[in-house]
Image (cartoon, rainbow, N blue to C red; front, side, top):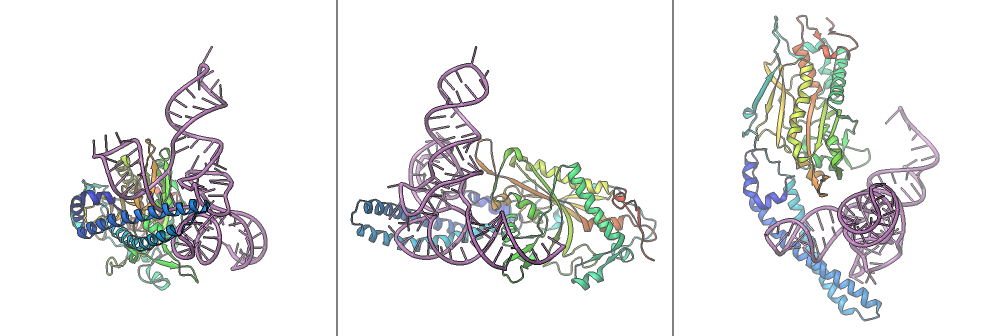
Amino acid sequence: MIDINLLRNNIDEVESRLNSRGFKIDKKSFIDFENERKNLQIRVQELQESRNDLSKKIGTEKSKGNNVSEYMKSVGQTNDLLKEQNSALELLQSKIQEFLLDIPNLPHESVPIGLSENENEVLRVEGEKKEFSFKVKDHVDLGERLGLDFDLGVKLSGARFTTIRSSLARLHRSLGQFMLDIQTQEHGYEECYTPYLVNFESLKGTGQLPKFEEDLFITKKGGSEDKLYLIPTGEVPLTNFVRDSIVDLTELPIKLTALTPCFRSEAGSYGKDTRGMIRQHQFDKVELVQICHPNESYDVLDKMLSHAELILKKLDLPYRVMSLCSGDMGFGATKTFDIEVWMPSQGCYREVSSISNCEDFQARRLKARFKDSDKKNKLLHTLNGSGIAVGRAMVAIIENYQLKNGDIKVPEALVSYMNGVDVIQGKN
RNA sequence: GGAGAGCUGGCUGAGUGGUCGAAAGCACUUCCCUGCUAAGGAAGCAUACGGGGUAAACCUGUAUCGAGGGUUCGAAUCCCUCGCUCUCCGCCA
């Protein structure tokens, strides 16, 4: 949620910055809402004040044994008016709230301006692409004899679900463990295990709700109407650790990581990436979250980028780093880096990590604050990133480490996690 | 699933219809006293949102005692619904 005072004081600036990400703000409605709100609020508070005075008076007069019928009459009129004005105010305030919850975050000034992914900026290209002496296959063709079973996924659940068996399942597990170990041991993140089902409040805090319910999977307790949502990313539970809390300056930065499954409905991406396990309803990901002092969030963003990059370096996978343009960033981000790994079969780079600074956008929704050295409560900054997506990383390994016979060499960093297995062999 | 107890400020904890945003203690801040330390004394110390003030200081109003609704002129206090925590029983990985 953006700061309402920014809208009150600099609405034109907000408008143009939102325009750069393709969001049109309804200025007139907001100004009308605000004027009306101000009048109503003053009116309501005056009425409450006089009701409180009168009620107090009734108390004191009654205790003296005086007649209070005049006061009662007048407080009755006040209350009638109050009831009417107050419900108007409440209605208006919830409208303003809805209005605010729908507005995306403002892009940072360093973000390239653009409306589509074509305008994302390549910052760096890293790693050597391997030369293959044979015609490369994609992970679907390779995976068939290695344990990637798309048909089984469909049978069990439907499109965009995959089942992995045997050594490849082991590789998948190894990758998750490996990434988690790097982030905890080399970068000092606290390892967490979190719920995968979360409530409305949590998703509202990180910005997925109320606007993007269609992107989520929704569950209900048997026999109950209460909804719980499957997490679309570990960012949701981890960032919500600080919801409704005031943390001490000395606790910052808070660095959290978790290996979690992620569930996405992929509404609106029909026909996109239908082949293989690039775009699934369910995938695993190691999530990195940092919660820090506002002065430090851009330094932290750079650090988190390097934390995600280290995984690809250790796996010796070629990748590039992108700075997303204003129109391609997520709802809550002021600045986002994507890391894209090289996929030889497609001859292109695919996203395996996205690292964003949300500044105080989520913190405001979360009421996540810290006690500053001047004793005032201030909003924290929150950042999140993937460190990294397990499924896509495995796809990249399959494709980049393929051998002529269709077997897969295990990246050196993973051999110990694979109990010494250094080649994944398929059934012929 | 059954039965019971509870949820009050950063923490502990009093408060069962009015003068209570809330006693007291702890913690914290400032000051005083004492040669440091320890002890003692005084004052201050919740959050959000309004109004005033050029701004800060400050003044002032409203709301908030798990959440929502109700009763009442008036609710931390009474009633209802929900959530959560704890104890006991049952069930379960």
